[in-house]
Image (cartoon, rainbow, N blue to C red):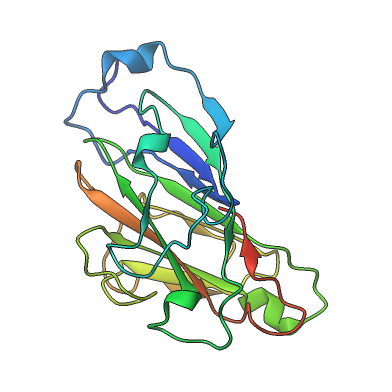
Length: 211
C-alpha cells in the first residue's frame, strides 16, 4: 500500500472525531489497511454521558476520558458519542463543570478530525457560542481551551464545527490555530480533544453536545 495513504478514524460525539494522517509520508501503512473498510458504530454498552462512560470527562489529564481502545485502528472508522456540561453555571476557564477532555493515544501515522455539533435553533444569539472545541498534545499541559492547546474554535450559526490535526477547520466564525501551525504530526503520541461550555449555561441554550 502506498506509504502516503491516509488512515482515518471518525468519532461522532456528536463530536465526530476522524483519525487520519496525511502528514505521514515516511511510515508505511499496516497491511491490514488493504483489507479494512470504513467501520461506523456507536460505542457498545453505553452508560450515558460523557462519551458513554457514565461519568464526567474532566479538564485535567487525570480526568480526561481515554477513547483510544474504542477504535480498532485498522482503517477508517466513525464512532458516535454524546456529552453534557449541564453543571456549568457561568463561563470559567478552570472549572471542571465547563470542560470535557478526551484523550486519543494514536498509533504512529494516524491523525484525526473532530466534528462537534449541538442543537442551534437560531432563537438566541448565544446559541452560536454554546461550545468551543480545542485540540492539543496529550502531555498533561492542556487544562483549558487555550492553555497548552494548538488552537481553539467557536461561534457557529449552524451549531457545527470541524477541526483536525491536518489543519482542517470549518464551520466556525471565531478562533484559529493560535499557538502552533498545522499539520500536527502526533507521530504515535497522544492528543487531547477539549470541549468547553462557553454560553451553554444561558437560558434556552443547550448544554448537550455531540462529537
